[in-house]
Length: 267
Image (cartoon, rainbow, N blue to C red; front, side, top):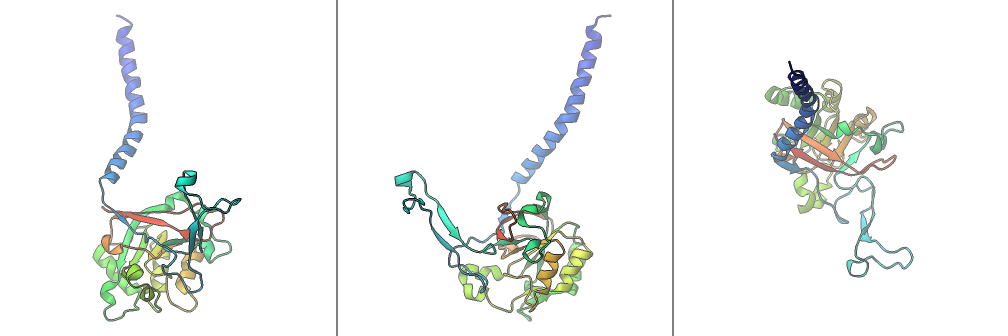
């Protein structure tokens, strides 16, 4: 009996083992990428500029050409081969993230939020049918139960977004966008989502979670360790359930809020 009769089966076995231990992991990520690349994407983020709406307690953004600190001359492509912009604005500007630290001295800052909390199952509560009779409706616990009766239980770890179509006024009618009161969350609904459904974060089209004088809903969501995304766009283009949301923002050390980029991957 030749040695090759033993060597070949052993080599084949080792090859199978290596393929089984290394291949599937790589293949699964590759397959996942191909799947995601084949899907439709929806941008949930507004573009913004110096004149876009902002809370009355904050100033408008200022954007100017970045200049050489020595000569004070703006950099240009013709002169320097590049150009850049100097931004001066509050963190809570445009579509933005509010980390827990925005309302809590012990809450997580932007740089402390887990990467795994930045890609989540997305559920969208459509409040627009309720606004014809109550333009400033607060999405209630009863509304939430009605949604679950139709679409099923809100999945644990989800990002819960509230559609009100306020986003349509962002560019078209900025003054109307800044109106108060406006349609928003109720505290009871958000508490249920956090305590009974275990969601990770919330989002909405308005500049705030709610319009109560004490900001009860916003205070609750941030002080319980959850982040929120405000001034979202295009929620009317996302299904009630089944999509994913990806949210990113700069990793500002001890950051208390910053413009964010959010998008949905449709099922």
